[in-house]
Length: 431
Image (cartoon, rainbow, N blue to C red; front, side, top):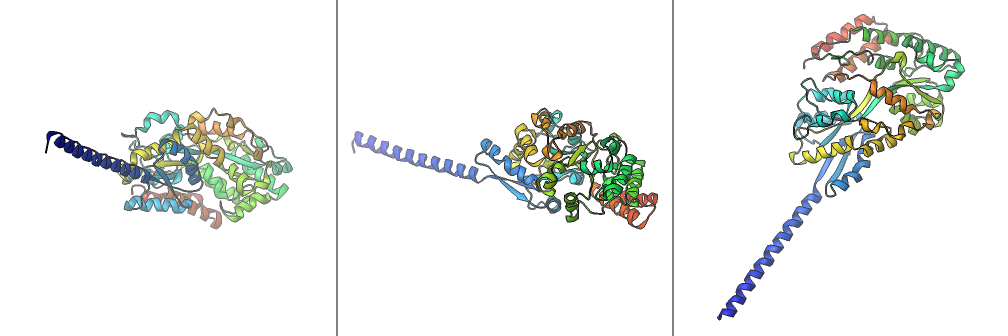
């Protein structure tokens, strides 16, 4: 074999090896692209948070076109039960989970969620951008921040202006104090036959959320001392009992068929709740009552939070997805357009302060007779004090409701009822 032939063969072999290497490189690149294409984040949520997440997918796809978002949606109670089970067993964990504030304490005090105050998250960099009380709600007693707030529920008093006019009751009279609120209810009932509220429990729910001192939670203080025998609870129970004794409540529970029918028929004159309810009334609960409702601040100058949603990352979720999970949470909570889109489409009041200057707040709300109610809700959001959460809050809520029912239905003494509740809660406080 001559030198020329030898060189040609060598060139051929090198060319073949080059082709093989190129093919291998292309195959590896294709496999990498396929792996990326197959990557996904699982987000567990409940209505209407699931719809908000789905609406944000196009914005996410622009950032990560090869990472899909899989939304697992369950009804509200089923969702939180499933998340409790998933955290305790480390099975079927999503990459991101939505949590409502009423359940946040139960999750915050355990070790099942990532501490977002630590690297690589460092959420404290963004603390000043969130509504202060919402950020504080996600901070446990050890200083760990276990979730990022996405929407809040400024407390408001929704009332039927037509019923108040018929009864000769002004908004000022209705909201001057808790006592005047109940007295107004008696006038409304006498003139129109409508109940002041759906259930006397609603009176208790708002009253116990007002007058909370720094370092206190709803039911426990920072040292897990039970607070349910305090004057705050005594007055809340007394007001609820007055409502029941004067037959001013319809005795129907929230989200029941009777509750929605009461709004449709005008047999319930007021509802104290989160600002989000105005949207629900307009969209599906009682759309035919458009123009008849108005919104006011809570009676007696009270400011209270009622509801709110947070996003968290389970500690035992796949480690490979946590960086992307944190990116997704930042998109949902720190992106002005995503926050405003959720506000406009689902009445999810934003937890992001930099949305508060948007012209949408100044727009009249047709359902509320052209009232610019969002301005009042924005004021409330800025004035609500932070309330510490506790892992036993959800259980405490059940205990207090049970004792209130005994007061309302069986005539149990208020002091005895609250003492019995305190005894049971003290047994559970440190579990």
